[in-house]
Length: 242
Image (cartoon, rainbow, N blue to C red):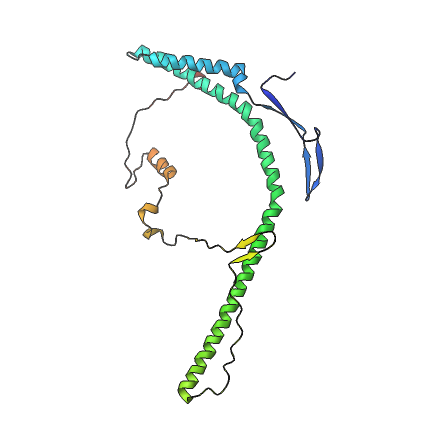
């Protein structure tokens, strides 16, 4: 008999499935048991109630002597232990879910990969075609400009043009939109960038490496432009931890 905090997940047929799909061999389990109701877990409830009791005691606690500090230290040790216990219970619930989620995501990543490649290849071929057509059109226009300039120069020199200019036919400008019975393909322009000289980049666009700064400051070193100071904090180490 399953308790109420477990749920059973079945496939569409209620049984295992296997077989080749696009070069993949699929072997999946038909049933997965997942804990989904921590609110109904007696162990979790007990930990939560203990946490509520400690919070209530902390709210009315008075620390006025060294003995009070020692009592509070004991409670802090208990709190640390309860936090770890709750975290372990959380892992009991999310661990199998995360494992299954990772496996599902990897499977669907493989399923969608051919489509992503097909999309990338198709888009690139369209862009390459448009770029080639535009390059050809610009070259045709360049040739015509040179021929017209040559004809104009001959006119200035001789007062006449001795032979036909003979302009080449230019390809039409590529359309901004293609319409089919299934879709419309539109041209879009996006801006891209790269930082070529970080030294002249305005300060507002320079982000400090906080992780690296913290390591240097923790080691006791100083960094120009960084103010450091010390604050007292508390570290609780339970005797069972060493």
